[in-house]
Image (cartoon, one colour):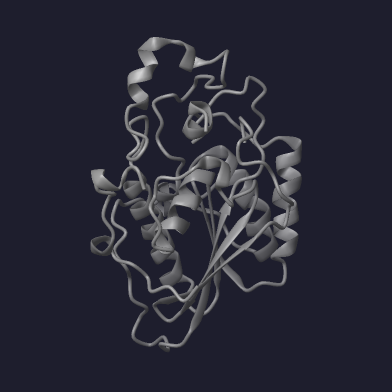
Length: 263
């Protein structure tokens, strides 16, 4: 696996923050109103209100945004001004149509433009307003704004090599465990608010994939080429009461290569 690829960016009980820790070193080789914005680093589980039956089914669809217009092929991360491409808008529409007959009562998105634009057609379809949750934002990355492709990018410059020293945390960006905790906080909040219905959360590839690995009890560092998280894909978390009973992955807009720069 190249450095540039590394950089781009069942019945399972809901884990609490205390249940999962960062990998030990020895394991290494193995647009809504402002008041609707939320954000917290706590992934602690929330319980359903007392009046909600313990066997109530709630589904939280965690979606990756559509394709982004990125002609320079940079790692844009959290930079503003990156909107969906024409294909990305088509992908968002395809997902909205696939969810048209679902009981969607809540749509929440990352504050970044591409996520907001992806969420909009889904919200319109169900007559709700897109809310913003900062916990759904893209992962932080020190290579943000640079090209990281092999041969013509930032990795040709020795001053950047020190950033690659630890692929397990990782050293060049937001810790995987921190990503998992904030994503779980967003899911838990939506799960409680949409109890008995369905919610859609629009985020980004690395946060969505990290959340899934966390919920499945897998190590958080991984090979980016193996991510099952295509553009505009949907990872549906099915809850019975407070218990996660299934994780279902789907690609309403079709498959895409997780290694594609600018996706």
